[in-house]
Structures are given as C-alpha cells and as structure tokens.
Image (cartoon, rainbow, N blue to C red; front, side):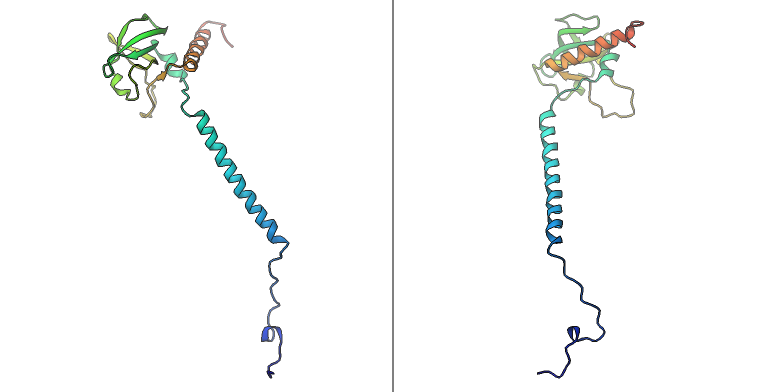
Length: 172
C-alpha cells in the first residue's frame, strides 16, 4: 500500500470536483439542436418551393405601361431586325398588322424569334423606342413581357386603372 493519504484526488485544499453534465439536461439540449436543424431545413425547403412555383412568372410594370405612347402585342420580324409586327393594340395610334421600327430593339437580347411579347413603346421621331424610366439605375429590364394570358390581363388592368384615374371623379 502506499504511504500517501488519499484526499480529493491526492491534493490537499483542492477545489471541489466539478459536477459532470447532467444526463437529464443533455437530451434536452440535443433536442433543441435537432429542432433548430429541422426548422432550418424546413425553411430552406419552403424557400425552394416558393422559388420553383413563382419563378418565370412575368410581372408587368405599371409605370412603363402608363408612360407608353403605344402598348402592343407583337413579334420581332426576321429574328434579328429592328422591327416588330403588331398582332394586337392596347394603346396608341397603330393598328394590328402594322410593322413598327423600334430603334433600340437590339438592346432586347432576350427576345425569342416568333414569340409574341407585350411591348411598351414611345414615339421617337417617326419610329419608336422602349419606354425607359428616369431612374439612376441603368440595369433595369426593358419593358417587354411574354404575351401570356396573365401578362395580357395585367396590361389591360393597368391601362383600365390609368384611364379611370384620368377621368375626374373616376377613382378615389
């Protein structure tokens, strides 16, 4: 046997032993961690689903539509030209079947050939150009929208509301 007395870990005046983490509190903190992980994963899945189900929907900007001299549904003529063939007129002094020269149509890189779009245009001498908002940002998209039933309906509502506001007493 040893001649050394056995006192708290062999040291005199040592601090009392630190109690080990309680087994009862460990599962509660672990459950809290799992709950946090589960909430984070659930939130991420929800955001992903929102992105998937709302991506690609066009929202028609009311300001360019209201500011435009001409709002039409049309298609680019010959794929890369600066002309559009008008299919339908919502606003302006043009007719279906007209071909309009749009001087900045080359700036619309996303136009797909043979696809109909809603265009918001303003007069530029004897031609037309896209309505551009007077904002400090220069990276805003040009005001053309795929001509789907939703964008056509949005366009009609914007124009109807603008007409109601223009009439005295038309809208509060």
